[in-house]
Image (cartoon, rainbow, N blue to C red):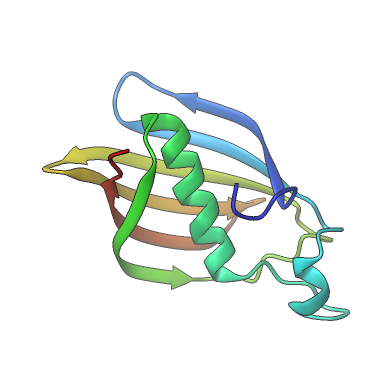
Length: 124
């Protein structure tokens, strides 16, 4: 985990196809929120992208490197003090030498983020 104690995965479920749903609980006391932004904490977009990468790594059981992200739409601010529980829907597909992920992230009934990313499988 790149940012230890920023979040924990409360639930992770995969159906028979390539759809995954994860419930993530943010830690509002994490130090990252003291600088982003004081008295008005917001989850940085790059942290949200990292969470998506880490959940995908857990599902596919491989370390991944981001190759490309497109169609990134941050649609609502995520304040961990107000809405610490996020629901992520991931469509994960294997492609030539990597993984393609389409993600939609929600809090309550609000869509917070939509993105598509391509990852390379790391070889050790």
